[in-house]
Length: 267
Image (cartoon, rainbow, N blue to C red; front, side):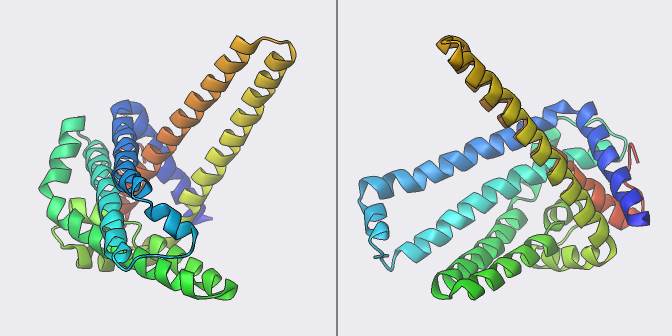
């Protein structure tokens, strides 16, 4: 019960930070846009070069593996960089300061070599798991999925460690696993609880807006149906941004709690 109480307190602290600094939503927004840009940069040339058709036929060129590593590396670096900026800005607020978007980017830029190194580790792990998954049966895929989940949980605090502690990427992963021993309950309960709540809100929003679209369509109000559809998409995007930002702030609060025993402002 103590872990549930602490998890709830940490979530409230994270929500307090997000209420005070709504500009933190900029970081997950830019992360999503840059991630899509990276995907387009890799996939569009492959599509026009006919490589994707070869993949559909089960033929994968040898050079596709190093290209896949570069893709993983680029994606992870973008995600970790903006997450580091978010965590850095959130930590300033948790410490009693008044952060700006520029403060978050300044902290991330100061640690970009370490973030790149951590992205290389994550890309290697991701590529190895993917390679194993393609060569094993159903049971093997299930085991690989568990390994991937274990890696995600163990490295959850790696970005906050990189931002707030003077360590390299390898030590950041080790430190994250070490801190997990103290906060595994708060990690699983807090993130699981937020995922459950946002999942329910997503479903409720879809059902509500879907019903309005059906009603508008049945009344032959095509313009109104399209408007409700656009509103549904915008709502889902906003919910996704809030969830991503809140989870990033929660990681900062959890790291601070693991370090000091206090989550900071709002705890």
